[in-house]
Each structure stands twice: as C-alpha cells, then as structure tokens.
View 1 (tube, rainbow, N blue to C red):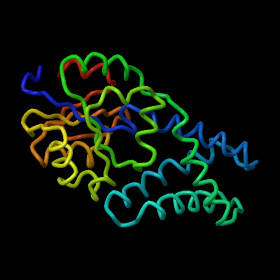
View 2 (cartoon, rainbow, N blue to C red; view 1 turned 180 degrees about the vertical axis):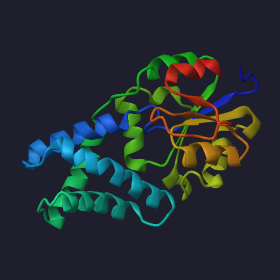
View 3 (tube, rainbow, N blue to C red; view 1 turned 120 degrees about the vertical axis):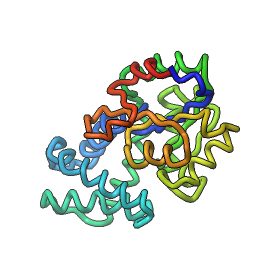
View 4 (cartoon, rainbow, N blue to C red; view 1 turned 120 degrees about the horizontal axis):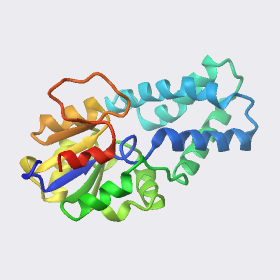
Length: 228
C-alpha cells in the first residue's frame, strides 16, 4: 500500500468515462439523424485508430482542435469512399460535440472506486479533452462532485505529457509530487508525463499494451485497491 499518497489525479476519457462506448452511441445517433448510409461498425473500425492518431498530433501541438475535429472525419469518409461535403462534415463535427456528453457510460467499477477513494484521498482530474465538453461529461455522468480540482489542457495552454500541466494541477490542488499519483490509460501522456515530474503513476492498461515491467499496472479499476 502506498501510504505516502494524499492526492489522486485521474485522467477522464478512457480511464473513468468510457469514451469508445459513448462515442459509438453518439455516431449511431448522428448517422440515423442525417441518414448516413454507412455501416456503423465499418465506420468505427476506421475511425478509432484515425482519431487516436489525430489526438496524438493535437497532444504534440502539431494541429489545433479545429483541424482535429475536421480531419479525423474527412480521413475516415475518404478511406471508406463515402461522398460527403465539407459542410456536412463540419455539421457532423458539431453534432458530435453536442451529443457526446449526453451519454454517460463509465468503466465498470468507476463509482465504487471513487466512493472508496473519496473517503481517504483528495481526488482530481487532469485531462487533455476539450474544455467545453469535459465538465459536461462529468456532470451528466454524476461524478463531478468527487473531484476537488479539474485541470484542462486548454486552461494551461499545454497538454499532457508537458510538465507544465502537471505542475499547474498540483499547484491548484495544493499537492506535492511525492504525495501525488496519476492514474490514466495513456502511457506517454499520463504515465511518463507524471513520472517526469516525480509524481507516482498507475497505468489503467485495459487495452493490454506491452509496457515497461517497472510500470505499476491495473487491468480494471477495482485493482486500484491493491495500491491505495
């Protein structure tokens, strides 16, 4: 058990909030609304890796969020040979942001582990997601009240794994690195980013990636109890 920890920082998407499931439901709604004649399964098979690739470019400050929101869709429709106008893509992009936060699926065990941790630790969020949607996701999913602070990359001007966002979050939380741990799914952004500023880190490796054997790993949220 890690008795020195007082502050637990969580990533949101892909860690607590089930992004892939909620995203799929959002696209299902949009396809029905706009009568898009594509198999949702075929679309998501192409979209999910494309989206991850564009998020990495966004995280590395090589594109802005407008480019991310447009090009991740344009690339997918192009690859699937589906004719669609730029105007329609921008409308779909707006629909996606509008409806995404209305879905509230969390990873199994999210509420249980937050209830468990909330009685022992100060809980916080550090996220690279868009500022205008992240708070709405937490509100609709009924988890916002667990967190003392929420740090968003747009507030700081940099994204994880940049050290500035971790220092900003710790200052807001009045936390020191030696008493803090970051829990997230992204090895580069969450884990290496936290370790670089002397925070501890716990990787939620639900996607079963090959990781450095020295990294602390959990495969489900309940396993956080093995450390905290």
